[in-house]
Image 1 (cartoon, rainbow, N blue to C red):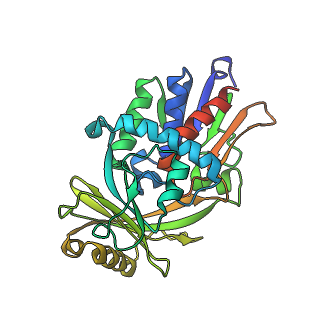
Image 2: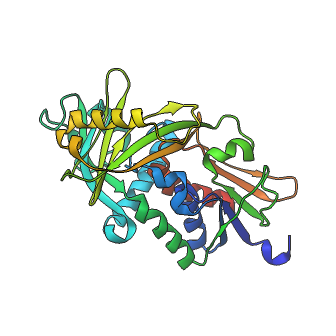
Amino acid sequence: MTGDQRGDVVVVGGGVIGLTTAVVLAERGGRVRLWTRDPVERTTSAVAGALWWPYRIEPADAVRGWALRSLDVYEELAERPAVTGVRMVEGVVGETDLDETRGWTAGRVPGLRASAPHEYAGQGVWARLPLVDMRAHLPWLRERLTAAGGRVEERTVTAGFPEADAAVVVNCTGLAARDLVPDPRVRPVRGQAVVVENPGIRTWLASTAPDGTKAYFFPHPDRLVLGGTADDDVWDTEPDPAEAEAIVRRCAALRPEIAGARVLEHRVGLRPARDAVRLERETLRDGRVLVHNYGHGGAGVTVAWGCAEEAAGLASA
């Protein structure tokens, strides 16, 4: 490592966690390079439905703080939705208790109330939450990073990150951390979604049936994202036509107009699940600092800014 590299930070991973972490580090004065295997538009984050809500992520106490800090940021970004891709949208989280939700959100979620029978047939919570259009948000994060002096490079790494020629390396590799750390506690949870033309739906809904199957729809101005699945330890990234039909059918049972919507796209993503998010610092044998920030399951968007700020603090400790 040369002298002019010792002040550098290499963030490995170009999804929402890596991009957000790189932005925070660069805006705090770091000389940041973001290494990503794929263009940010082709990362797992690009597939996300991207509603702000903790989903399949632990530990709960830490997640609460990370999520609420991220909510603060998203509310600000929602003032410029056409630029940032973030909008505040109303909808229902089904099979959710109002008092429990009020407890963990500490009064921070706007418009929180029990859903009415005409809004949802079961028990649910009505809320106004950030809904993120990842087609716009990921490129916006990349532009914000470069505006702060950071660089984005399409690079690959091997186990232990020996290629990362910087004093500080931040591991935001998601599911790839299973091999790169290596960490066998990271595992895939397969999610499939169907994108259709939006037939005029303006609110979102996330529901879980008694048999455990899930249905959600997230409205964007020109399309509707329908889901979904949560298949543990499944690595297949090819869309399943039968599952796609089932997703549309479940969503249409909630909003009949979805049944006739034209299908635009099929998506599959592998959520990087772990029994708990790994957000910690270690010193490698060669003296480099390695900060881990991975294992966010289905809630990367939800906790991105809170985790990024904590990771940046660890990087400079």
